[in-house]
Length: 311
Image (tube, rainbow, N blue to C red):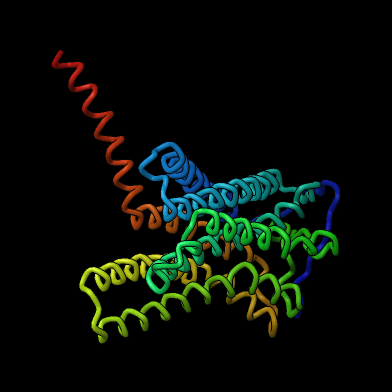
């Protein structure tokens, strides 16, 4: 019923591997590299363009920054797996458990960053006069809080040695089985922030509908509808995560009752890595100020060479 996991502290050669390990490993690594470089470019654009120095863009920048850290952790993990597959060895290095912990932590912070964006939009509509809740100090406080929760909630896994080296999947993770740790991890990293984001969206829908029935100024109603549209886009992001991370969630659920496939983590992480690149691109597409900032920069670089040629 429980999956078999073993900790190794040395090399074991001549490990049989499947023919699809290397191609799939290269594909997922490329997805992660593209996602991380794209996130770095977007974060730097937000950081250095003064027109992007607003509270909504601060929250978007937070999402991209944690995406960078998540991407780096996953790139390191995929390189480790790919190297072991290529060399046909089993090897549990000193940082393997930490990579597993950091993956859980950054996943939680990333999902919470989308929740913060939804909450900010909700506050600006429902409590437009409560400027303290909309202030940069309060938003920085919330960002710091989500980071602390994200970094602390899985730290116990390191001290209890629950993150172990899975030989078949060449990765350090919690073993998928019916246990408090798996349920705790799934709720902290995924279920709670995602459900709260969806809850905020539906609360906002109800509020805007009530506004439409009341005697409300046109400008106020249009502004509320515009903010609702932004929250809807955030929910679309979360939906992409939900759909493409479904195999991992399904294997967690099935592990409570049956023996799951030996290479469940390899299969799951293909979908997770594809969802990562989809989310960072869609976030850019949905963030109009960032798109406009990039377009201005592109136009500037295109105009300067033309003027030089004419002169």
